[in-house]
Image (cartoon, rainbow, N blue to C red; front, side, top):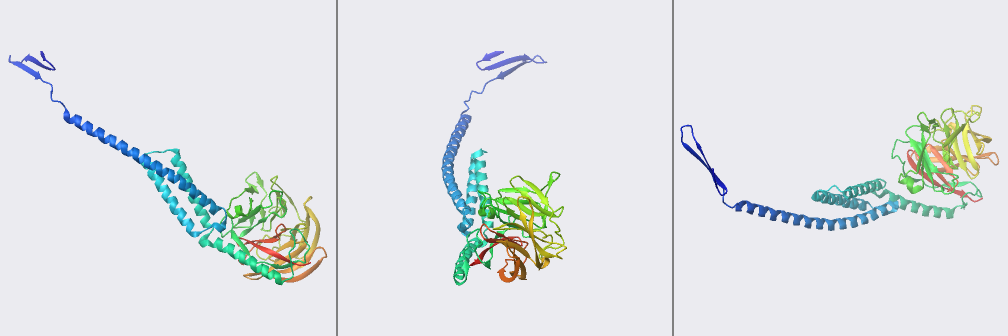
Length: 442
């Protein structure tokens, strides 16, 4: 073998004795084509990198603008949340369009950068949360009904003021009984459908604490269901929280194998941070202390569960509170179904005094107390209810009256007066309804 630089020659003898030479010559041609291709690829890669850097700078600028607009959008949503009078139908649609644009921009940015940064996830969550808030707010304001309702309420107050000037009207102070009884009941103020947004939740009640603890003066309560069984009670920090369905706390009256304090019927109230209701078994009156979260019950002597109000079964014990204390109405076999009124001693949770009336309980649709006077209602027609009877516990005298008032819907199961604001609260076929009460001069 001979070595020629980088080449070589090998020689061998074949089978027939011939000489066979093998020559290997290296390729001495310079690979200029491959070098050129590598240079083109390098330049293209540099251009691509520069392009992506420019894109990144552009998206960085867009992200700054996006965050500023998102901050502005957050402010606008907060304005909408601040009160129903801020609702504007067009505003909802504009917010929704802008939120979709923001989400598309974030998606484009995330795709371009091929990134799964937590910052993008945070932006997605914030945008979707805001979308939910906008949808929720709009659901409470179909076709600006809330704004119309507010304007109607203002007009109603003006009309009532005009009417007050024409009548013997007493502007009795809250908590005072220096008046001559009910003059009239105002127009129904419909707040909204119940917090469950369920039109079939016909059985229930709502209202305010009639003797609130300090710091809970604005608290509201609510419970409803499609049957007459009572399982829990929801409370809300204030009226706005009630309307926005922002529950402050839910108290369970039943937990499987742990406790069973369930009730039945619909004539319950909250008084002194305590929930008073008709106990399911045994048939008795009960109170659930929301501070200690404990319940006790007492059998009402001679009370019968055969005589309910006209509108619904199981309304055998009806609790009420007024300026003078806590009450319960019921009927007995001895009274032959006539309405009986008992004053409850809150300390002992027992009846301190009892009065028997002459009205048959099943002919009555509901009853409430104001300043120690029992007022009973009956149905006139599908749109009209009437306070037709009054019993004065101070004198033992009864009186037939005629004080008609309008019903929002024909069927209702809970009607109670609250002495803290002098209003009637009605649970009217799934809706929160309230009435202002005007009193005669003493």
